[in-house]
Length: 147
Image (cartoon, rainbow, N blue to C red; front, top):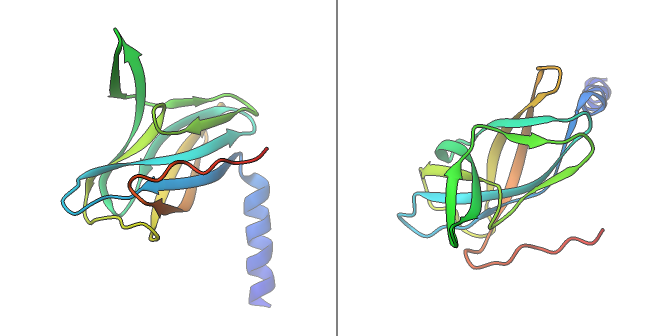
């Protein structure tokens, strides 16, 4: 009986989810490395913005943007990332991504990293997304997804 109640609770939680997370991954690290990137695809049904992240393997998680400025690639922290309604926003190398800062341990390929993301809807309500992001080898290219 408990398993049925648990399954129904999961279905109810999924029905209320406004943001879909696909293809999360973290770039692997070497010993003593203190930061790495987390990449993911986010789709918000009604629109909103990614406002924060956290992970037990990092002292902080920041939303970053990489962009060309005067022919130089620069990275900067941004306070939030807009998620237009129904559009997939790709957080990827060379663009928007999440930085896991002040790492507490090395992240070897094949392991997973727990990450929590907070998305604020257009109505101001906050949604918490919990995911397990697989760690890919340091020099690994992103996996191409067929659509």
